[in-house]
Length: 70
Image (tube, rainbow, N blue to C red; front, side):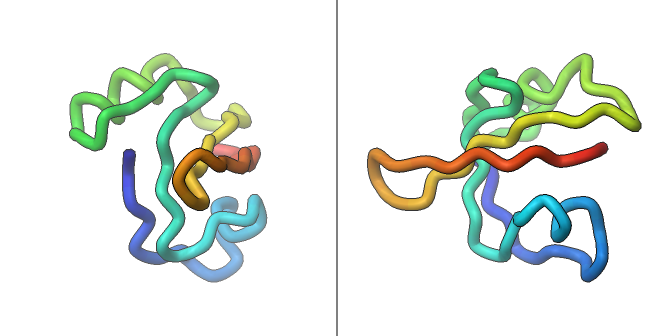
């Protein structure tokens, strides 16, 4: 996954509910492996102005999903 270190105040990420220490494991159902190339594959095809679903690992075996406008 991809670890969220911080969230810009008043950003789309903050409005969507992303928080520091969240761990993104998938984009629109496409799993990403924690590498830059894995993130690019998972987010590939997403465009500015599009809303994507980010799946977040909140604890082992449990996730939550947030919608983020790119």
